[in-house]
Length: 169
Image (cartoon, rainbow, N blue to C red; front, side):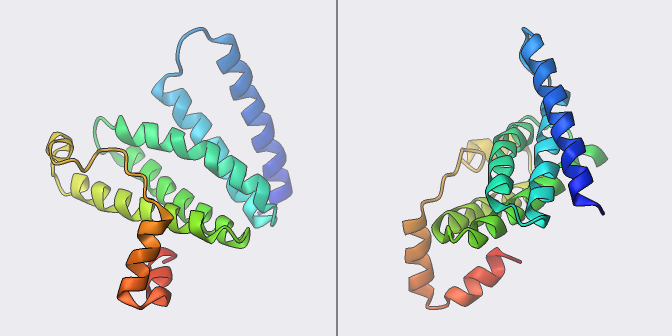
């Protein structure tokens, strides 16, 4: 599609969401968080496809904590939730690709590892493992990988090309 036109519309939508949030004295509802997350996600996607990688990075980084918040507050896995989690995965992949394009390989590795961890957890939840069970065994804790850990793992398997291929799908 026309990415320039999409960029204009998404910027307007983000401005409207910002005005609405500024005038509201209450905290954002789940629906408002979802709307803002998706706008920032699609804005990042549009910037990425226009090769505006710095702007894409900014938008995607702002969308990530919003998606993380939604992910942690999932009540049930209906069609809409599944779609949102799919966008979350695409966000991670676009973020990794953007970081690689910006030559920020260590950060890209950290994001790829974070996404891999999220995908495993989401797959377990989809298969009926209760969120409480996952919390009890520590799988729902905030996981922040460090590039040094990842680099050590890559070096130990002597196969960095395979790791990057898996991380980038």
